Length: 139
Image 1: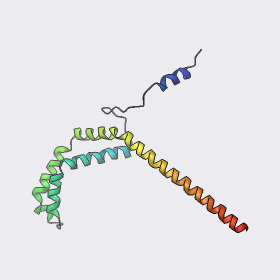
Image 2: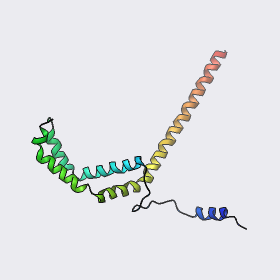
Image 3: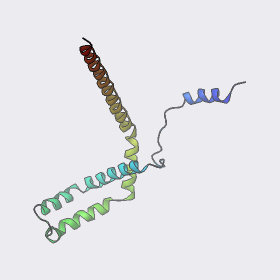
């Protein structure tokens, strides 16, 4: 009689890696949601780059006076950002975040592997130094 664990092990090995459903994603943690928001704001700012640039150029070397001197540029910039800051744009940012999840995970794993390799190298060098110091003291 076959045990359930052996039959499930065989079927699980045939399954492809887990893919994320971009339309109905899993709940994200707070830091992950923050990453999605940053991507969302970046996308909105990219849509309105000329308007933002025009306001920034007007506001150069101004402090309080920028409020009324650059009023037209500010209103243009704000209306552009409001027009592009939609739920659909946020959904696109979320989809982009999920689409690049594996790339970010792979890069993070590579970084951790490099750090671990360097840590082992430093430990090896420290042990060699300790061994050399012990040999020098023993002579």
